[in-house]
Each structure stands twice: as C-alpha cells, then as structure tokens.
Amino acid sequence: MSTTPRIAFLASQTDEAQGAIAALAARHGQCEPDEADVLCALGGDGFMLQTLHRHGSLGKPVFGMKLGTVGFLMNQHREEGLIERIRAAEPAVLHPLEMIAQTESGATVGSLAYNEVSLLRQTRQAAHLSIELNGKLRLDELIADGVMVATAAGSTAYNYSAHGPILPLGANVVALTPIAAFRPRRWRGALLKGDTEVRFRVLDPFKRPVSATADSHEVRDVVEVMIRESRERTVTMLFDPEHNLEERILSEQFEA
Image 1 (tube, rainbow, N blue to C red):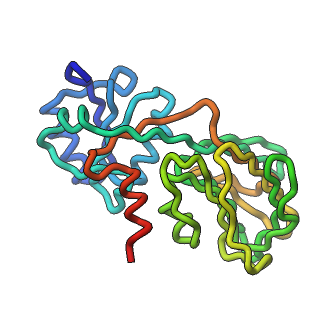
Image 2: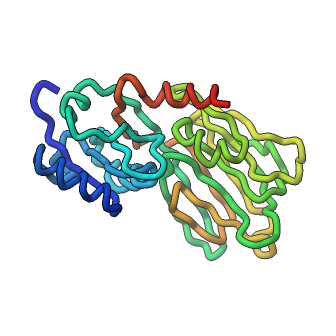
C-alpha cells in the first residue's frame, strides 16, 4: 500500500481489547468496515472467526492482534509500527466451507465455516450416519459421537483434538475426521480434495438426533448436511512475515 491505509479497528469485549482499540483508534483514526482498506481485529481466535463471519463479504484483508486466550490466527499485539507491519504483512487466502443443512422440520439452513463443520450427537445415543462423496456412497454406516470436515486453517483446532491431521495451507485439501468412532472401529477419516462435495445423511434422526455446527452456528435436528468449499467467498488474512500462518501450521506438526 503506497498510501496510509484506512483501518477499521474491531475488538472483543474484554477489558484488554477495549483498552487497545481506544489507544489504536486515537493514534490511527477509526473508520467503518465498509470504508476501510484493512480490518484490524483485536481479540482471540474466536473473535477473529466472528469478524470473518460478520465482515467477510466486504472482501477486506484482516490483520489480527492477539488479545485473547487463543491466538493461532492472530499476530502478536504491539501498538508501535502497525502501519509498517500491515504494509509488510504476508497474505493468506482462505476458502471457507459452505454448509447446507436440511432439518427434520423441512427447513434448509445455510452457513459458512472457516475452521470446520461438525456433526454431533444431541443425546446419549451415538449418531448413525452415512457418507457420500461427490454423489457416491463411501461409508454406509458410521456410528460415532460425530464427524467433521475441517479446512487447513482449522485443522489445528477441533480437528486436531479429535486426532485428525494437520493440513498444510495451500494444499487444497480438507480433512474428514470422525469423533470417537465406534464402527468402523479402525476408520480414522480421510483427506479429500478441496472441491469434494461431502454429504452426510442421518440414518435414525428420531431415535438418534444430530446437530450440525459451522464454526459457532449450530443447527439442531438435521437429517442431511452437504458440505463443500465455497465457490464465491474468500477472505485474506495478513500475517507478520516472521510468523505467518503457513509457518505456524508447519511448526505445529513438529511440536512434542
């Protein structure tokens, strides 16, 4: 950026983040997200996801600074040198997942997920699901607590805690990961091309109800869920060169 970028500062409700936004806005000015060149999100990963969901349609790059508990998607918080950091930042273009869920009542609900879409049992009864890939039945019955499809950016979050693989950014693959699978007992999931259309069908929705969650947006009592990479939406996140998102994901694979 040759000129000084117009920045829209956005902050979580913590005292630390609110103090930071006041100081940064006083120094650099403040403008509305739709008028900004860059969005600056102050908080943790949860607030970053909230920012992407709320403002991702604007197509503005997002530079995050960690002022929360978890900050995998954030840069370190420093008040000094923000304009220089934004100019030198390396972009990471993310393709969210698109979820279309059909509920038992006949409703159709759509949502986007930058981390993962997960299906989870709603009661003590395990979920019974079938899995289709690009219209072909690949698993006629999965009995499990649930299952998820995770992006590369989200592969180090819930997916990793469920023993799913960490995915390199830019590899154009997503992870299909079971959650506490009972049958097939030895199935550990799959790596899929990013443009694969995944369809889950709930085999016994009345006795074994299932919910679907796209990041934090939950839809209960689903009977069918389709997931694919969004063909229309991308978001660009900005990272300090010395600690960019690709390097963070790679480093996660070598942590003891």
